[in-house]
Length: 80
Length: 371
Image (cartoon, rainbow over all chains, first blue to last red):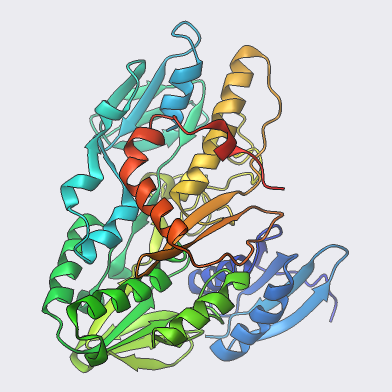
């Protein structure tokens, strides 16, 4: 899948340390609609590990973790 | 804080400063948790705003009900229309416990009345399971749930019934403490104090009749006394504008603290959508950026002030020990030692807050940059 996949919501959490990006994602998941896709930009290594773990536990779909030049783009789909 | 800082620097002929405040009261919110444990009295954490403000500041005790940033006007509930050249939004965070179904069975310490109720419930609690959950993200003071668990341990030790009480923290994150580098230290303390925990437990609902709390992730925990950090939202007056995200948090530039593309509108403190702690310390550091920008603009001496994401927090671990954390966008916190010094600094700050921060009397070195 292309790492530039378009999403419904974009959260720029660059500059925020863990757990900031995960907190932002959980907030977006709570506020979002089922089926919505969310991209979160993060340059925090801990979030790169924690976000996929949470997405798996919470039963959503991790579309991908894409390495960009100076940050990661993590794309998630809300399933429930 | 912003009004006083501006009034301190600007002459009367340079600016007229007006503060709109709903009830004219200034509440020291870190005191709530101490009310719950019987260590603070409600009347000691509130003061009349007027007494804290410099004379140059006009205080309007009224509720802002409409903000029109295109027409540069704020309307109050008494239909007073205030025009401005610069607007600083410090509308804070609202708590909404009612957003969690079954919340009526839960306690919290995010306002005075609820903290007093919790104090009574704790005083009457003689044994069983106390569960601390988190009803939504973001919430004010990220370390507060772990801090309250440690203070709970200390409280029941002092009452001599710690062995009859199970304390469990339900963390929404993959760790107990929100700030990762500090988590191993806090985990060690939890183990030492026999405080239990579950991770990735984002509270979704409460079933009072079964005494169960359920998570967004599909798990449940039983309790005898439930403390639930309430869901937070941006202020209603902000949610009625186009200035905020879906949570009602003002869309704020992380460095200039300007709102969206408006050069004359700033946001500060809990009200923003910035990826920093919702805490008084963040507001304090942001204050110098906002006031510096406005003063520079008025005098034509702007230095392009930028907020670096700095936050300082003191956490009380009980037994008169604590930790102090200091970090910004570029410098993650370093695990500090648990010390009596950090505890006493927190206590000192709690006592002397009124004389220092609202009146902008903090020494310059405290607002310096991290290196």
